[in-house]
Structures are given as C-alpha cells and as structure tokens.
Image (cartoon, rainbow, N blue to C red; front, top):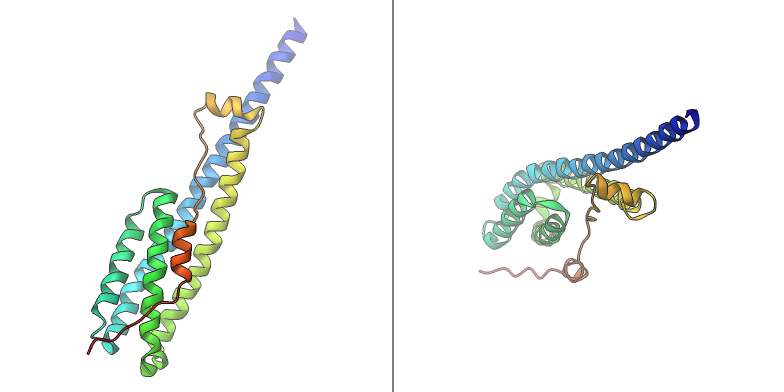
Length: 186
C-alpha cells in the first residue's frame, strides 16, 4: 500500500512538474511577444515626429509620407507574429524610402531634432531586434517541449500548442535589401 502511494505521489509530482514547465514556457512566450509590441509601439510613436520633421524640408514627397503612415498603421494593427512580420517588412521599406529622401536634404541631416529622432529610432530598432531574438528563443523552447516526449503527451492534454516564430519572408526580405529609388517630381 505504501509503495502504491509513493508511486502515485511521484507520478503526480512528475505531472505537476511537466505542467508547470509548459506553463512557464508559454508565459515566457507571451511576455516576449509583449516586449516586441511595446517596442513597436514606441517606434510607431517616434514616426509621426520624424515624418513631420522631414515634411518641413521635403514638402513634395507626399507619397513617401503616405507610405510611412500606412506602414505604421499596419504594424500597429498586426495580429500575431506572421502578420506582424509582413507588416514589419513593409514598414522597413517605407522607412528606407524616408531616409533616402532625407539624404537629399543636407540641412535636414544636420538638424538636431532629426538627428535625435533618428538616434531614437535606431535605438528602438535595436531593442526590437533583441526582443525578436528573445521571443523566437522562447518559442523555440516551448515548441521543443510541446513536440518532445514525454511533455508532448501532456501538452496536448493541457491544450498547450506550438507557437509561431516571428520571421521575415524570404521574398519580403529581398524587397528590403533592394536599393530604394527616390524620384523627385518637379
């Protein structure tokens, strides 16, 4: 009888340990995604100031400003890693165009406000990259637990599922790496 009780207690302890490790991994993924959204919101808050600063110098570049504004809105409204990854690709391309416009205005590049906003944006981009790495590492750890024995049996039982990585599509990545053409209409 004592052996049966010990076996039952050990099995319950094992199940609790697996359950808790799965929950911890799941919460870590949620926390990492939250970090990404916080940094993306911070960056989105910087963009209107940056756009307005550039607008003062490049009034005829309306399409660039519209693209940046649209990409900003899509990034903020993205739901989940896949949609956010696609929105990020478009946002990066729009920012690249904005900075290409800024390159054509030496006074703008020398403007302290523009420099400060650009530095803040670079800092925020670095934080987003770090958050993405942490998120993808957390997803990797959770997915490994969900897919390997014996935790895979319990993951299904506790309804803990594999999560998506935050990735950039190869086709979209190629678009980011292409040089941006800036044409001035007169």
